[in-house]
Image 1 (cartoon, rainbow, N blue to C red):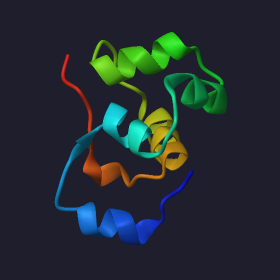
Image 2: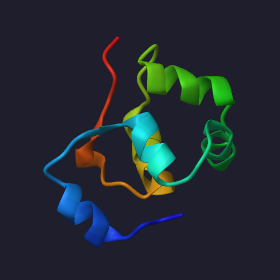
Image 3: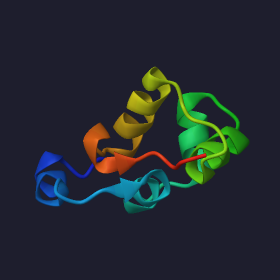
Image 4: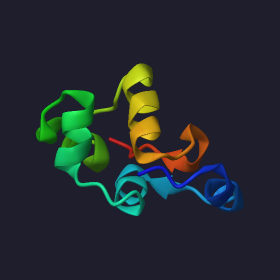
Length: 77
C-alpha cells in the first residue's frame, strides 16, 4: 500500500489531488473509508470538495494512501 518516501521525494515538486493520491496507492474510496471507519460518501465528499476533512482526518488519509501532506491539494468548495 505504501510506496515509500523516495518515490514521493521525487514528486515533491508536484501537487496532486486527494483522489489521485488514493488511486496511486491502488485503493478504492471504500478501502479508505473502511480504514478510517467512515462512510464512503464522506471520502467522496472530501475528494469532490463538498466538505473539508479535519486536520487529523487529513493526516490519517495521507498515512493511508502513503503520501506526504504537502503534495496533496485539497479541493476548493
